[in-house]
Image (tube, rainbow over all chains, first blue to last red; front, top):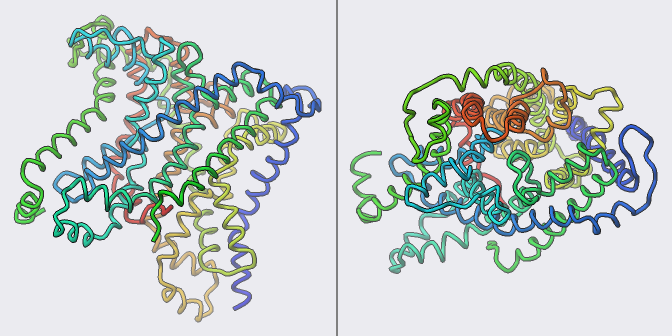
Length: 285
Length: 286
């Protein structure tokens, strides 16, 4: 029996090797690289904390962080509210719900550059879909990605469109809510809104919490759309796009690695913060 | 659904509310599908038709010019093959190794198991961007720049989220199934092969699809590791086509996007059962 238990270790060995080679060692290397000035070709020059000091004087850094934070603050709740609403609507096994589920869930699978390009065309100020439809009602639409004030709303439109990507997690949680609770509430004369407020939402808080954490991480790591779409006045210069440009556009590996550590710390702190709020609003049995 | 049950449902919900629900759902679906309708419609339009207000939803004259133009610049079939060329070994590695590791975590009690599993969960949340640059340096120092190897090889160490997912799945399998085999003196690997793999088939298909989608939609990783045009994947080809053409070539751009999305939409429709498997597997509890 003992031998069998030891065998488990061999089963996890590939992952353990990966952990050392592709996570632990690169992390140690990253700690060192972030303290250097390195342009890939030459040798890394040790500069101490200069990269981290430079960050806070860099306007581009502050701008990209501001763009990302603003997006996260608005997009994450919007996405959660939208996907939760979708999930509640398609959760029962009424006729045709399977089709609606597939349609709403689609952005989880159909994404990437192609979709970003389509949205760029949809948001085209002169001939795009949105302004074309607005023109039909004699409304002059904004310049979207070409107007610094409208870049963020452009990204929010895309975020809402993609909200159904997390649909399945909500559907799974909804399925676990016992029907008895609703039946009991109905006998007590509760209307739909009350049922949602006092049964559905409280019992969904664990999965909302889970999606909140993942949503914040995803917002801070936003890359593909922003890389393709950009935006006037550097309003589309999300943190990861800035980091990518510094590393692989300007070959400032030391500085970019410092940026990566800062992002890591931001995400870590936010996760801890959200985790701390858990006891105030997340339902547990 | 039977008519009787339908009637019962509509009685419970109220006919008006039922209709309202469907109206909202249909409107929502139209919003979801509109970008694709717009894309397809644009891709078949002649240039003067594309730049016309009010919008013509149905092209005045259907033309394939945009597709011909797009294919001249973007060899989309070749790009797709390149993506598939990365995706297939990656799926094999990621799915098989993740299942193996998950089996180890699910069925054996070795020293430090819980601690290691906590670390696995931590790596799911954290360090991709931190390790990105050093990992790139390591690969280029090993001579693997402009190569698919850095995109594929790490898959053979498993993927943390797949391991997590498969462990959950394996733990729903009652221990009685393998107990007899083990008493018969079957080797661990044999138990894994003969019992766990067949039983976990739907879950394995689901993570294979996720793995494939991950590769298909990944831009950042491919952008970092691949330079030559003939090695471009779908994402890279589209991204470079988009930045190259600027704003004027919406027709060919939509044609290219359309071609890139068709296989994925087809896959979604064909394998929707497996994509939706996530519901049955209980999702992921917070």
